Figure 1 (cartoon, rainbow, N blue to C red):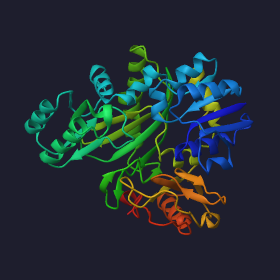
Figure 2 (figure 1 turned 30 degrees about the vertical axis):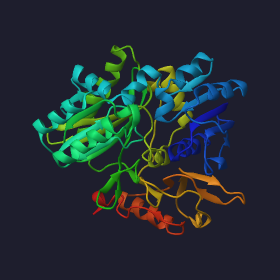
Figure 3 (figure 1 turned 90 degrees about the vertical axis):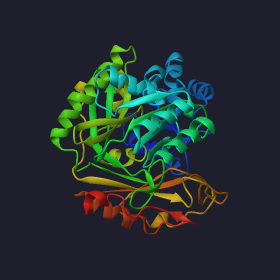
Length: 420
């Protein structure tokens, strides 16, 4: 079958890498793709949010199947548009993707269906939000309501920090329209765990647990990023916690969306906090997380294309989803200055010397001479397996040693919070 993957980051490279292993996928395309993806698929120069352009190209080139991977085109309704054009597409429709596109929607959904999460209030007026912060005190969490590239959350240690976050979102327009409404939450405590799950509108099948590292610098310091590394599975996600999450969070969420007339088909990301009162939802995403996808798909032992079809057909309960033993770790190599200002166009060297790992490309392009160049903040995700988490982490760092470019940065403590 002719398959198109929409997107151009590390997540999409991992999806393409796994799809390329399926005997059912005979031609693979990615739009817009990147220099690493070009090793596996034909890259098409169409922006991921160009819904009309993407649908037109998919129709003209007789695509049999389209995977919409990033959040923005899902929220814009690209899956709906593909289906209207008669093209089979994987991912939630627009009315289900709102579970990520609007934090106020997701919080209200959890409140209505008694799904455990932090206490919250939603605000459309700045002064009311500031008054609420004064009344609640700190620590406190401020979230932009809409999509903000994974950076629209401030965990404020002080009242002043929380107020500054509100002003930046609502007054200064830091995140555009996404920050015109803010959600302010109590600050939950406990280990964080991510569980991505396949869903077919009725059934939900969790993947392995994982853990992302959002802060830019070692010791969980610095600004939030799209993710500086991830590993799977999480030692904190015990069988008892997994059972509680299925009973109290995963299945209730799928049933809630169905009851609201928004059946969710695709990948639903559960960001969880393992609080003293039990697991609670920090956030939902309506797609594969990045960089969690890289270690997860590195451990997946089943045909991903078969799983995608089962999600669309409502047959997940009849689908065998297997995982390799051991653990995997993805180490993100980023441009100096990320997530703030950073250079592009630096030459990447050492990729040919990498052993014992797979390098997923996130922000790369080809130079005129065919060299790999940086083209984004997060550039590469070096992903390795091991019999234990400690081995997986060590293997990822060892594999990354030959890689270098001007002002490259990375965290040296990915996974260490769990390993040491």
